[in-house]
Length: 223
Image 1 (cartoon, rainbow, N blue to C red):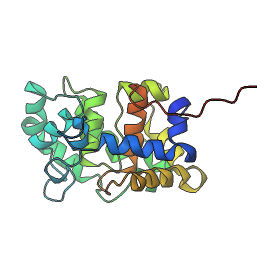
Image 2 (cartoon, one colour):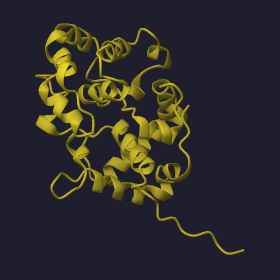
Image 3 (cartoon, one colour):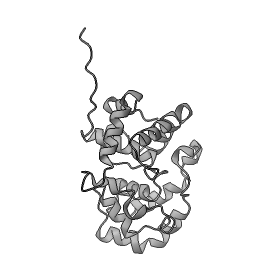
Image 4 (cartoon, rainbow, N blue to C red):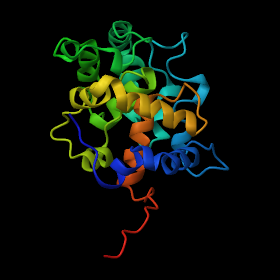
């Protein structure tokens, strides 16, 4: 199980909820009023999981990923959009659009989990690494696949990409308490259901890891 610490743990606690919601509102305020292009990742074109394109990687998905500071260009883009189009479509069709990570049983996340085959196909493409692959997957299945980049890896001390199973354990612990709290933060921030609980967690971890969300904690009393 992952174990958020320090400022992230504070923002994920009940006492830090108002501050966490304020950071989330600021992050998801669209440009040009807001300052984060990532606010458009899920929303661009109506979302990557909308029924008409849910099982197809599109140029729009590549643009959406660029909102999160990752570019899939040149030969890699050609592989995704054309050369491996049929294979990626086949693999996407095996991954349901109406299931969230928290809904899965732990044993279903093993080697045969269809998401893993899709992930392997993506990282087999030259210049598509772990970060780009997970962002592409999160664009197509936002409630099922979390983003993993270097900032989140460092913030959570992730070892060798071992993230999906520990995160699932954290989300489902104590009757899904952490998952429910993420949904409560989403509601408190005034965000819609297109923003997944996974993304709420990802954004807070990223903001803390980048030093953009330093909680305003009360100073410790003088002894």
